[in-house]
Image (tube, rainbow, N blue to C red):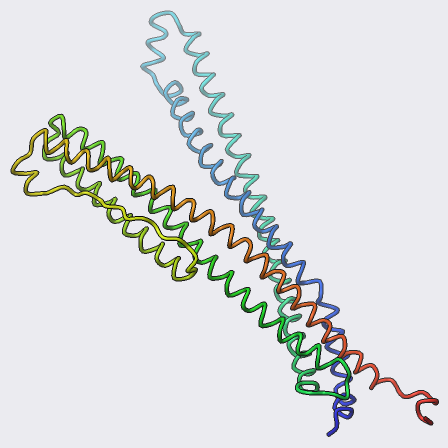
Length: 357
């Protein structure tokens, strides 16, 4: 079957798919707006949850203060006994008013939260509908691409410009896939560095604890202080091991990421500390911990600098991937347009002048 015959046979299906694509084209941008709206609602609900918890605590405190006066016969009797009945009534009224106000404020916050949750439920329902429409749009686009490829794939010299647009689309697709791969690798590396930074902060806190226990040990802290110092150093060791592992993982994902210097966690010498425990051994261990702490602080700052550089590079790569995606979409539209023009020429009957030429 000739290409002309294939075009004529596929013209109806082509028109049907184009109409479906036009009807669902809005879903792509709408679903992005819907997702942003859902994210805003989630943040509002999270803030409301925190406010409700705070107000529940406040209401509980005010209720306890109110009950101290409302249900305390002893307090009432003592105020009567010393001639301060009115003061007791004033205080009881004040506590009751503060409790009622706190309860009202709590109920208002819960009502606001319920309203946000209701809005989110409706937004999720709408988002699900948009996802269905967007899924239909992608399916129709895939069907149109398959239809066109079944006719135009490979050399088609009878349709000027089509082969060039097809080649341009392949080039744009390869460029986008490469840009997307490089950005995803860098983004994953940034996540590893974020986790490493968190563990580094854990290590710094543990070393700070170890230094405090070591300080106490120099002034006769005893066995318990020794144990607490060693436990803190053990936590610091565990955290720095995690840091090293995560930075190494980030480097495997993105080889341009720099590494960290070594961090030596000094655990001391268990037997000598037990057998020769004195102010001199305690001072020596304290100095080792301070040196280790200073080393960790330098590497912590180094890690933050590495993370900042990686985030900046990730932003550049995201920009490059978005630009590559835009070029890919342009190439796809240009190829689809030249193929649609070909369908249009086949679908239109020749004019009289063309027929007799």
